Length: 61
Image 1 (cartoon, rainbow, N blue to C red):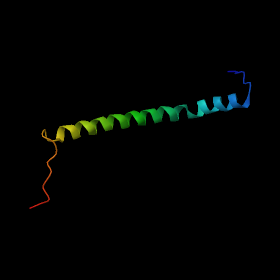
Image 2: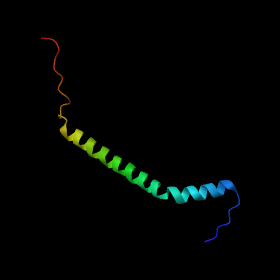
Image 3: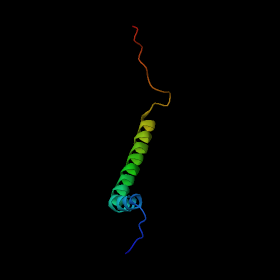
């Protein structure tokens, strides 16, 4: 495969895209996993809340 490289910047961008392609895919997978985990956490938190709101105990007795 022969690519016409016109500048050092182009060569660096090409090398970066080849070397980091797998890392970018992994980063995307990690980000999506974090989004899904946050959604599950929010759903659990919403399910566990009391319909009338949180119960606040009075500090005065």
